[in-house]
Image 1: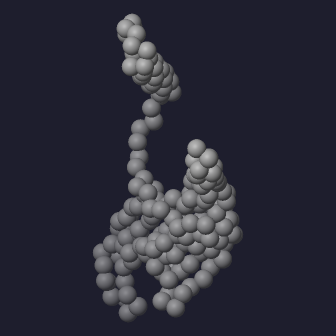
Image 2: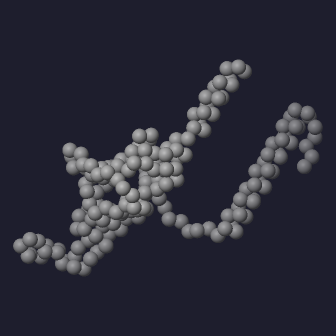
Image 3: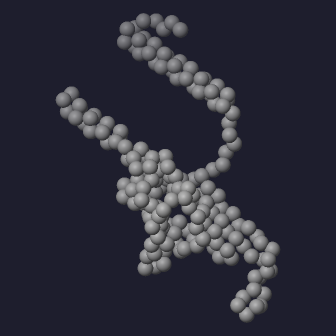
Length: 184
């Protein structure tokens, strides 16, 4: 038993210690077809229409501690908008990849990186990392909003189901230990 207590204390300290955790996902991506002809430098028609590609990426700290020095690496620089507006440092590596460095991201705080590219493909977001962790890609999905009254009914039924399961377990253990008949 004396060996179990330090192990339990260590396990609790590891699991309950607040850590930063970055989640990265694409909220949406869209291509606009613009009915405007495209001409080259000589004035020759190269295309009957143009395209504008957009993408919205979200970076969120889902952990319980502040993430510091968050680096978002994009394949190349394009038109970028950050929301909410905040300062960041821009860098470029030897391969021409574009790096944005944010000082910190508090728990539950998020940054949206909006990309726009005209007549070219959008650059890919390569990686997101912080001093404390590496960003995990998550799948984002749209879903309809469920009315609050339906959620409350579901929670109430789940609570009663859990209570019934616990009560049944206690009765079953009582039957095994005390050999008393089961009365429901």
